[in-house]
Length: 247
Ligand code: PEP
Image (cartoon, rainbow, N blue to C red; front, side):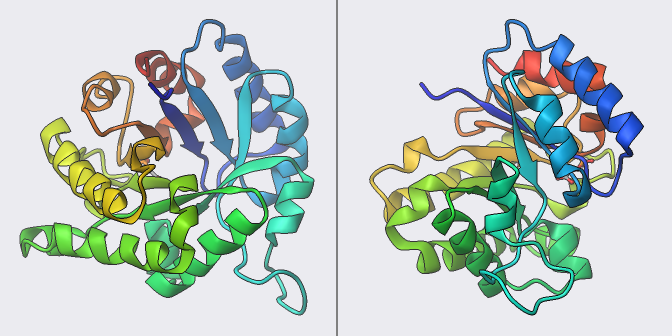
């Protein structure tokens, strides 16, 4: 059985001092963990956190990357640059990027492709808004978002991580119930199975107000292979409780 993956998404939070305190506290609590752990940090801190996570058993992640290889793209960060800092994972298509930066399904698919081409595992986020859920469109939306990535990445699709993040649950304190989450994860697994014989290898993470209190029940679901954790990843005791729940 594959180990679960717990990835922290720090979003646009942190400072040199707070990063050091947080990673040191996490490292001190990693003994006996039985899952994969990553922290996805703001780009300016990749070098600092690369050094801090060395030999801790934690991996380094980024929160985005450019779809381009290199060149005149002011402000962008390339996969090659991320690789230079030992980055193992890159979140792509987070709902905040889709919402505030107009990222489309096609662009997200290209970003996933660029990551894979450079040996970085893309954590591809999909998820419906509250209006879409209420309109009964959840399945249609997540399948459309994942289909674009499958279409562009073909046989490499078993190398991605998927994160199901209902937009209405992100940073709101509202969590999908374990049953609601499992239902969508099963849909995503079936879609992956239709695309690759290795679909069972793919980690499908749940994200959306996962915390110390609800993690164990969510992680007990058949198709929930880990968590993408925002707010709770900034507090060492909370993140460590989620890591402890991932067995
Ligand atoms: C996220 O941003 O990926 C996320 C899941 O955030 P939160 O845990 O704060 O809802």
